[in-house]
Amino acid sequence: MLFSHQGRHVLVVLALALVSLSCLASASNGCERAATYDYIVVGSGPGGGIVASNLALAGHSVLLIEAGRDASNDVSTTVNALYYPQSLDLQWSFFVKHHSDPDVEARYRLLTWELPNGTYWIGPKANAPSNATPKGVWYVSYPRGATLGGSAIVNAMASVLPNDADWDKIAKLTGDSSWSAESMRKIFVKIEKNLYLRANESKRGHGLNGFVQLGQGDSSYYLQEPGRLALLSHFAKDLLKRPLDTAATLDVLERDANFLGASRDGAAEPFGLPNHNNNKGRRWTPRDLVKDTVAKTPKLTLALESLATKILFERSASKPRANGVEYLQGASIYGASWQYDKTTAPRGTKKRACARKEVIVSGGVFNSPQLLQLSGIGNAKLLNSLGIPVISDLPGVGENLRDNQELPVAGLSPVNITSLPGDPAWATCTFGAPGDPCLAQWEQGTGPYTLPSGNSECAFLKTKHSPDGNRDVITFA
Image 1: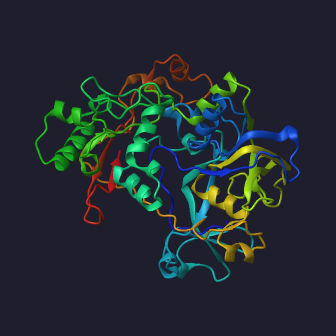
Image 2 (image 1 turned 60 degrees about the vertical axis):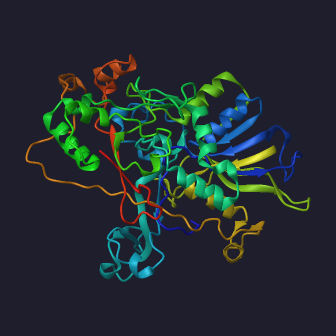
C-alpha cells in the first residue's frame, strides 16, 4: 500500500464523503468513443453505489466500476441470521500501522511478520524471528467489502448517526457549510426509509420514503429468557441512575438512537440499535438500489471484477482535469484479496473508460487514497520516490487517518444466558444447508430467521477523555 495511516476508519452510517474530480467534455488519453460516459464512479458501496444509481435515474450515463463480484446468490449477504460464516472472497484484509511510535507498534501482540518462505508469524517484536520482516497489524477483524454493495455487505449493519458536533467540526475545518449537521440531516431525511419508529416517537429528522431501509429489533428477544432481561435491566439502571421496572426497561431498549434534538450529542443513555435491514431479517445494501436501477434504466453500466488502477487526466488546460479511468478486469487480482496468490494470480485485462463530466472516487477509506496516489495525487516526495508522475502535490492524501478502536468486553454470569432465541422453531433450522426449512419460510417473510436478534440495543457513554464533553463511546450487544 502506498498510503500511511494510524488505525482504521469507522463508518457510522453513510459513506457520504466522495472525491469528485471534474472532467473536460472531450475524451482523450486514447479513450474510445464507445467507452465514454457522462460519469464514472469507482466503488459500489454506500457512497458510490448510491451516487451512481441516482445519477443514472436522473438521466446521466454512468459506468460503475467494482473490483468484486455480485454475490446476490450468497444467502449470508442477505439473511441476517446467516451472516456468519461469510465467504472470504467478498472481503479484502489489510496490514495497517496502528501507532506512529515504532516502539509502541512493536509491542502489539497481533503484529504480523513475513518470513522468507512467504508465510507469516504473529507476535510482538521481542519474540519475532530474526529473519522476519514486519508487515503491520493484519486488518482481518474488520475487512473491507470487495463485492457489489461494498462494505455494507460484510458489516454488522449498525446504522447510528454520528454526533452533530462531528459534522459541524468538519464544516468549520473545510469552510464548507454543506458538511454541517443541518445539511447532513437533510440528506439523511431524503434517503432514509425508516421502518422502526414507534407511534409515540417523533418523525422529525427522519425519512419515510427513501431507499436506505433502517429497521430495529424489538424487545421480544429479551423476554425469551430471564437472564437476558436481567442483564440489560441492570445495565440500563446503571446508566440512567434510576430504578426501572420491566416495562420501563423494555421501553428504553427500543428508543430511537437517531432522534433529532439538541440533547442528542450528550445523551449518554441506552437506546435501540438501528440496522440497515427491512425488519424481517433481510439486510438492505446499496446492491439492492444498484440492481433495481439497472433493471429500470440502461443508463447505468456495471463493470464487475474490475480493479481501478489509475485516474486519467487531460493536461492541455491550465489545470489538469480528470477525464477517465484505467482498470484491470479479472477476479482476485488485488493483493488484499483472500484469493490472491502472487505466484499464480492473473494480471487482468487492461481497460480504459472516459467521462464527459466527472470521475467520482468512492473506493473506501483505504482504496480511495491509494488510487489517488497511484494517479499522481498526494505527497510529491513519496510519489517521486516511487516514480509516479505528480499531478498535484497534496501531502494530506493517504495520511492522518484516525480511528475509534473496538474491543469486546466479557463477563461471568451466575446463570446461563444463551445467544440463540428461545423459540422452538429454531430447532428445525439447518442454517443455510440445502433444504433449510427456515430459509424457505424467510423467503415468505415468516419463520425464525425474521425474528429480532440480540444485536438490538446500544448504549452511549461519556468518558473523562471526551474532548468536547459529548458522549464518546458506544456499546452494543
